[in-house]
Length: 182
Ligand SMILES: CC(C)(COP(=O)(O)OP(=O)(O)OC[C@H]1O[C@@H](n2cnc3c(N)ncnc32)[C@H](O)[C@@H]1OP(=O)(O)O)[C@@H](O)C(=O)NCCC(=O)NCCS
Image (cartoon, rainbow, N blue to C red):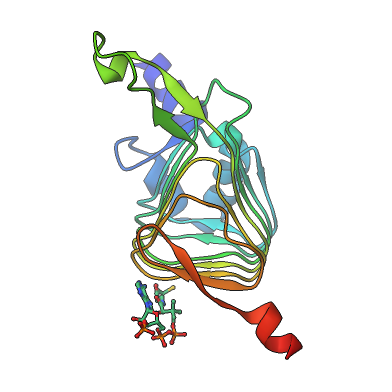
Protein backbone atom coordinates (compact mmCIF):
# COMPACT_ATOMS: atom_id res chain seq x y z
CA UNK A 1 0.00 0.00 0.00
CA UNK A 2 2.77 2.49 1.00
CA UNK A 3 4.82 1.38 -2.02
CA UNK A 4 1.82 2.02 -4.26
CA UNK A 5 1.22 5.44 -2.71
CA UNK A 6 4.90 6.32 -3.19
CA UNK A 7 4.66 5.34 -6.87
CA UNK A 8 1.60 7.53 -7.34
CA UNK A 9 3.38 10.53 -5.80
CA UNK A 10 6.84 10.06 -7.32
CA UNK A 11 6.56 7.62 -10.26
CA UNK A 12 6.95 8.95 -13.83
CA UNK A 13 3.24 9.16 -14.58
CA UNK A 14 0.21 11.43 -14.15
CA UNK A 15 -3.18 10.14 -15.22
CA UNK A 16 -6.83 9.59 -14.36
CA UNK A 17 -5.86 6.03 -13.38
CA UNK A 18 -3.37 7.36 -10.79
CA UNK A 19 -5.66 8.51 -7.99
CA UNK A 20 -4.51 11.52 -5.98
CA UNK A 21 -2.55 12.84 -8.97
CA UNK A 22 -5.61 14.60 -10.32
CA UNK A 23 -6.89 15.64 -6.98
CA UNK A 24 -3.51 17.33 -6.33
CA UNK A 25 -3.72 19.19 -9.63
CA UNK A 26 -6.96 20.93 -8.64
CA UNK A 27 -5.32 23.06 -5.94
CA UNK A 28 -2.79 25.66 -7.10
CA UNK A 29 -0.14 25.36 -4.33
CA UNK A 30 -0.24 21.55 -4.47
CA UNK A 31 -0.24 21.58 -8.25
CA UNK A 32 2.86 23.75 -8.40
CA UNK A 33 4.74 21.44 -6.02
CA UNK A 34 3.48 18.27 -7.68
CA UNK A 35 4.17 19.29 -11.28
CA UNK A 36 7.66 20.46 -10.31
CA UNK A 37 8.33 17.12 -8.64
CA UNK A 38 7.05 15.03 -11.55
CA UNK A 39 8.00 16.93 -14.71
CA UNK A 40 11.68 17.05 -15.75
CA UNK A 41 11.54 20.82 -16.22
CA UNK A 42 8.53 23.15 -16.16
CA UNK A 43 8.64 26.92 -16.62
CA UNK A 44 6.83 29.63 -14.72
CA UNK A 45 3.15 30.18 -15.38
CA UNK A 46 2.72 26.70 -16.87
CA UNK A 47 -0.02 24.37 -15.67
CA UNK A 48 -0.65 20.66 -15.80
CA UNK A 49 -4.44 20.45 -15.61
CA UNK A 50 -6.41 17.52 -14.10
CA UNK A 51 -7.46 14.68 -16.43
CA UNK A 52 -4.49 14.81 -18.73
CA UNK A 53 -2.31 11.71 -19.07
CA UNK A 54 1.48 11.93 -19.04
CA UNK A 55 3.58 8.77 -19.19
CA UNK A 56 7.30 9.35 -18.71
CA UNK A 57 7.00 12.65 -16.84
CA UNK A 58 10.78 12.49 -16.28
CA UNK A 59 11.29 12.98 -20.03
CA UNK A 60 8.92 15.90 -20.50
CA UNK A 61 10.22 19.47 -20.67
CA UNK A 62 7.71 22.33 -20.64
CA UNK A 63 8.60 25.99 -21.10
CA UNK A 64 6.85 29.09 -19.76
CA UNK A 65 3.15 29.95 -20.18
CA UNK A 66 1.99 26.54 -21.37
CA UNK A 67 -1.31 24.90 -20.34
CA UNK A 68 -1.57 21.11 -20.62
CA UNK A 69 -5.38 20.86 -20.81
CA UNK A 70 -7.63 17.99 -19.67
CA UNK A 71 -7.61 15.22 -22.25
CA UNK A 72 -4.03 15.80 -23.42
CA UNK A 73 -1.93 12.64 -23.79
CA UNK A 74 1.87 12.89 -23.65
CA UNK A 75 3.77 9.62 -23.92
CA UNK A 76 7.52 9.05 -23.65
CA UNK A 77 9.40 5.99 -22.44
CA UNK A 78 10.40 6.72 -18.83
CA UNK A 79 13.50 4.50 -19.13
CA UNK A 80 14.80 6.01 -22.39
CA UNK A 81 16.57 9.34 -22.07
CA UNK A 82 16.46 9.85 -25.87
CA UNK A 83 12.69 10.10 -25.93
CA UNK A 84 12.01 13.66 -24.86
CA UNK A 85 8.86 15.70 -25.37
CA UNK A 86 10.02 19.29 -25.44
CA UNK A 87 7.26 21.91 -25.38
CA UNK A 88 8.74 25.39 -25.62
CA UNK A 89 7.44 28.69 -24.23
CA UNK A 90 3.95 29.92 -25.14
CA UNK A 91 2.86 26.78 -26.99
CA UNK A 92 -0.94 26.47 -27.27
CA UNK A 93 -2.49 22.99 -27.12
CA UNK A 94 -6.11 22.45 -28.10
CA UNK A 95 -8.18 19.79 -26.32
CA UNK A 96 -7.37 16.09 -26.73
CA UNK A 97 -4.00 16.47 -28.39
CA UNK A 98 -1.88 13.29 -28.29
CA UNK A 99 1.92 13.40 -28.57
CA UNK A 100 3.92 10.17 -28.77
CA UNK A 101 7.70 9.67 -28.60
CA UNK A 102 7.50 5.92 -29.19
CA UNK A 103 6.08 3.52 -31.72
CA UNK A 104 5.91 -0.29 -31.54
CA UNK A 105 8.22 -2.43 -33.66
CA UNK A 106 6.23 -4.84 -35.83
CA UNK A 107 8.65 -6.41 -38.37
CA UNK A 108 8.93 -9.84 -36.72
CA UNK A 109 5.85 -11.85 -37.78
CA UNK A 110 6.59 -14.60 -35.21
CA UNK A 111 6.34 -12.36 -32.16
CA UNK A 112 3.28 -10.46 -30.93
CA UNK A 113 3.77 -6.76 -31.62
CA UNK A 114 3.45 -5.89 -27.94
CA UNK A 115 6.60 -7.97 -27.25
CA UNK A 116 8.77 -6.50 -30.03
CA UNK A 117 9.94 -3.35 -28.27
CA UNK A 118 9.84 0.24 -29.46
CA UNK A 119 11.42 2.78 -31.75
CA UNK A 120 11.75 6.14 -30.05
CA UNK A 121 12.41 9.70 -31.14
CA UNK A 122 11.93 13.04 -29.45
CA UNK A 123 9.16 15.49 -30.28
CA UNK A 124 9.72 19.26 -30.25
CA UNK A 125 7.01 21.89 -30.23
CA UNK A 126 8.80 25.17 -30.87
CA UNK A 127 7.81 28.38 -29.16
CA UNK A 128 4.46 29.94 -29.90
CA UNK A 129 3.05 27.14 -32.05
CA UNK A 130 -0.61 26.08 -31.85
CA UNK A 131 -1.81 22.47 -32.07
CA UNK A 132 -5.51 22.16 -32.98
CA UNK A 133 -8.05 19.98 -31.20
CA UNK A 134 -7.74 16.18 -31.55
CA UNK A 135 -4.41 16.28 -33.37
CA UNK A 136 -1.85 13.50 -33.09
CA UNK A 137 1.91 14.18 -33.22
CA UNK A 138 4.06 11.13 -33.97
CA UNK A 139 7.64 10.38 -32.80
CA UNK A 140 10.52 12.43 -34.19
CA UNK A 141 8.39 15.39 -35.29
CA UNK A 142 9.28 19.06 -34.80
CA UNK A 143 6.56 21.69 -35.12
CA UNK A 144 8.07 25.04 -36.08
CA UNK A 145 7.95 28.35 -34.30
CA UNK A 146 4.48 29.99 -34.39
CA UNK A 147 3.21 27.29 -36.75
CA UNK A 148 -0.38 26.03 -36.72
CA UNK A 149 -1.53 22.42 -36.86
CA UNK A 150 -5.20 22.30 -37.94
CA UNK A 151 -7.87 20.48 -35.97
CA UNK A 152 -7.85 16.69 -36.27
CA UNK A 153 -4.47 16.50 -38.03
CA UNK A 154 -1.98 13.65 -37.91
CA UNK A 155 1.57 14.99 -38.03
CA UNK A 156 4.24 12.49 -39.07
CA UNK A 157 6.78 14.91 -40.65
CA UNK A 158 8.39 18.13 -39.43
CA UNK A 159 6.43 21.35 -39.96
CA UNK A 160 8.71 24.37 -40.60
CA UNK A 161 8.48 27.66 -38.71
CA UNK A 162 5.52 30.01 -39.43
CA UNK A 163 3.50 27.47 -41.45
CA UNK A 164 -0.12 26.29 -41.38
CA UNK A 165 -0.41 22.51 -41.79
CA UNK A 166 -3.63 20.49 -41.90
CA UNK A 167 -4.91 16.99 -42.57
CA UNK A 168 -3.90 13.38 -42.15
CA UNK A 169 -1.02 13.26 -42.87
CA UNK A 170 -0.58 16.99 -42.24
CA UNK A 171 0.57 19.05 -45.23
CA UNK A 172 1.65 22.68 -45.26
CA UNK A 173 -1.06 24.83 -46.88
CA UNK A 174 0.42 28.24 -46.08
CA UNK A 175 3.83 29.68 -45.20
CA UNK A 176 3.34 32.97 -43.36
CA UNK A 177 7.05 33.74 -43.57
CA UNK A 178 7.14 33.83 -47.37
CA UNK A 179 3.71 35.54 -47.52
CA UNK A 180 5.00 38.32 -45.23
CA UNK A 181 8.10 38.81 -47.41
CA UNK A 182 5.98 39.55 -50.51
C1 LIG B 1 -5.98 25.40 -39.51
C2 LIG B 1 -6.95 26.55 -39.32
C3 LIG B 1 -6.43 27.51 -38.27
C4 LIG B 1 -7.04 27.23 -40.67
O1 LIG B 1 -7.94 28.29 -40.60
P1 LIG B 1 -8.09 29.28 -41.90
O2 LIG B 1 -6.79 29.96 -42.17
O3 LIG B 1 -9.27 30.12 -41.62
O4 LIG B 1 -8.27 28.24 -43.08
P2 LIG B 1 -9.51 28.01 -44.05
O5 LIG B 1 -10.75 27.71 -43.28
O6 LIG B 1 -9.54 29.17 -45.03
O7 LIG B 1 -9.07 26.69 -44.83
C5 LIG B 1 -8.06 26.64 -45.80
C6 LIG B 1 -8.09 25.28 -46.43
O8 LIG B 1 -7.62 24.32 -45.49
C7 LIG B 1 -8.65 23.35 -45.21
N1 LIG B 1 -8.62 23.10 -43.78
C8 LIG B 1 -8.69 24.01 -42.79
N2 LIG B 1 -8.57 23.40 -41.59
C9 LIG B 1 -8.45 22.09 -41.85
C10 LIG B 1 -8.30 20.96 -41.00
N3 LIG B 1 -8.24 21.10 -39.68
N4 LIG B 1 -8.16 19.75 -41.57
C11 LIG B 1 -8.19 19.61 -42.91
N5 LIG B 1 -8.33 20.66 -43.77
C12 LIG B 1 -8.47 21.87 -43.23
C13 LIG B 1 -9.94 24.01 -45.66
O9 LIG B 1 -10.91 23.05 -45.99
C14 LIG B 1 -9.50 24.82 -46.84
O10 LIG B 1 -9.30 23.95 -47.93
P3 LIG B 1 -9.71 24.45 -49.44
O11 LIG B 1 -8.80 25.63 -49.72
O12 LIG B 1 -9.41 23.24 -50.28
O13 LIG B 1 -11.14 24.84 -49.37
C15 LIG B 1 -8.36 26.05 -38.84
O14 LIG B 1 -9.06 25.43 -39.90
C16 LIG B 1 -8.25 25.03 -37.69
O15 LIG B 1 -8.16 23.82 -37.87
N6 LIG B 1 -8.26 25.58 -36.44
C17 LIG B 1 -8.09 24.80 -35.24
C18 LIG B 1 -9.24 25.09 -34.26
C19 LIG B 1 -9.02 24.40 -32.96
O16 LIG B 1 -8.45 23.33 -32.86
N7 LIG B 1 -9.45 25.01 -31.90
C20 LIG B 1 -9.23 24.49 -30.58
C21 LIG B 1 -9.07 25.59 -29.61
S1 LIG B 1 -7.40 25.79 -29.03
